[in-house]
Image (cartoon, rainbow, N blue to C red):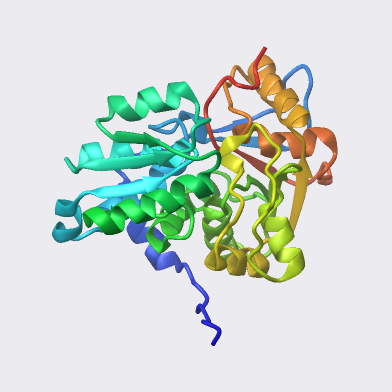
Length: 319
């Protein structure tokens, strides 16, 4: 018997409620224009600076919305998640703010600085497996054993709704946007951005960007099923789950216009460009959207307004 998962629809009313709920815990990040620089990529490119978010990435939006949506019983039991790093940091931040026991499972190759940050927020950190998927299996088992409340990094409705506040916020800042360019890991960010942006401005185009070494969502969309990749070959660990989830695949299939691929060298080049031209320290995943434009993997007419989300802070692409 096949289990049919109903579509997850993120409403603007829910996004408005989430924005109000998290407003005291996250930043309204700036949009930076890039026209008057030495080496412009696109005449009408703007950058949404989620690298300046409270925990260094957009993940603070979804994590805080999820934690603040929990009832007292769920909070009293403590919270747990699995992450490539950024979601875990955001959950640790949200858990600390709510004075809740927090456990974060990470793959063994997680960034050492992120592990230190997690611990500084008071989280219990467990390193296990080579990829997020391995850490996630272990986290789910621990959640069941200890009765902890599990917060999924990209397939949870409250997490996706929290991420959707980014698009709502940006279209208030720059209502003329024609194209959003969004890095894809598990698909939580682009699911939220596409849901809110298309509801506010149906004609806007949503373009996803994945590593060539981890085309998880592109493969799933092309095959029509949630696909598990046999291999992951990218250093952009936060864009590298072997598998997404049915709710994300459905939203992306319905609302995302195109997914393009960039390799690690392109992300390094884009990260260096962000640092040299804009003074922005973006991790490889945070530079993926810019890399798509810089390499020509995505071509946007110069008269269109294009918004690239710099989704995470870091220095792994900067020489």
